[in-house]
Length: 379
Image (cartoon, rainbow, N blue to C red; front, side, top):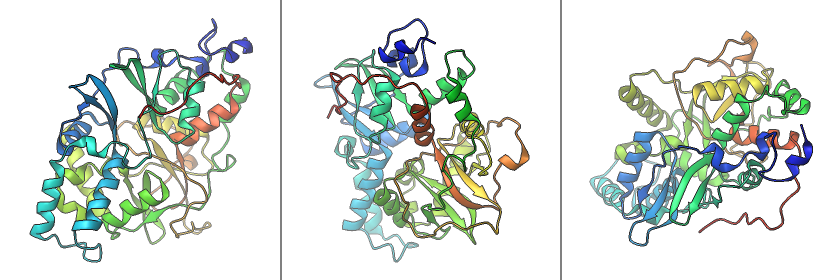
């Protein structure tokens, strides 16, 4: 590999994955967007129908994009209104007629009111020639996706962490991948420092509103549901859109929401949905990536047998870690038995797409920063 090409964004006959241009990774992508005048309910319908986690908001009157509707925005909105109008979470099993009317009214409000409400995933835009290395710098600020813009009025596609990591994985055996990157793939999750024992957890009876508060407070996207020190489920920000579909779930428990979501997903596509994907600390990064890609998950929990060191059950991670869950019935490749986690295990860590991308960038060639490149969000 000519390492000099890594220092010239978008240039070079040998295309290292960090030098790939954004337009190459979103080629022929169909962009799902929502009109800024649409209701919150209509926007959530689109998220569920297309199994996506965010939508660009398009102002048809001015023919321009005005922001992004993200599930963290929806969570923040639900929390704000719950605190103002609905009974406190001390009575999670009840739902008064007044509360139901309030939720019905709010779900018919315009989705544009929610744009960047959480301030977690703002509308970042990049030009088609922007390289993956430059986009990784945007992701390092906490974003999970960027809009690749042909012009102010046209989006070529949405480039996500998942798309970048899938591309790397599919080309990991090509000559331009460095030996350092290949060595990284075969290191264990424990060796990479991902077994932290500092996990934000809930119990099956934790009220949904309390779980949403935890997501908002710690700026995370997934919470392990733990019972008797065993992981029994997972509540993700992707589950939140179903609160608009079934208003009674707002006053329910974490496990009630998760069970309802899995049931609806199974009815929609006829496939069994696993609630949790887990790996052991001895598993390699390559195995964790394989499992996430094969299942469509954006994170996997790291678990260990009962009797090992237990996680700190206080909801305070040592550092922010974003994760997004998804589910699929696809089969993961065969691997050593001791790599796979189990429902009887204790949760001791998490590996997310954010972690994977960070590790890949840290171990890849270091492009020379372009001081003229604008990383600012397009608000």
